[in-house]
Length: 84
Image 1 (cartoon, helix red, strand yellow):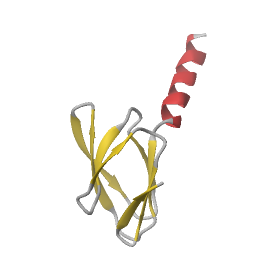
Image 2 (image 1 turned 90 degrees about the horizontal axis):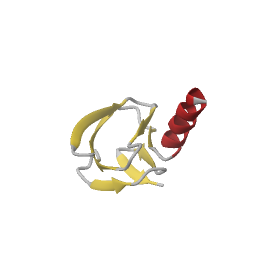
Image 3 (image 1 turned 90 degrees about the vertical axis):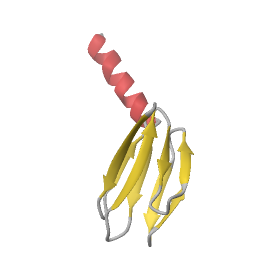
Image 4 (image 1 turned 135 degrees about the vertical axis):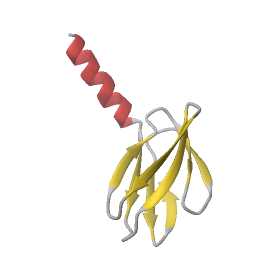
């Protein structure tokens, strides 16, 4: 019973997390501020990362700062990030 509850919690948390898709040939570093903690997340060329399971602020490579609540997808292409 406990194992099933933990699995359900992990699945539902990742369902609301944001996703970053880097479609470029270059790596980018995003600054993620979540719950008062600030961290840098490197997204390698052609890779996808999952971030912000509980909502956060993200500083994009352009310097723009956006708020994410979960479930969004950030696509980086030609050096420009867009939120879908």
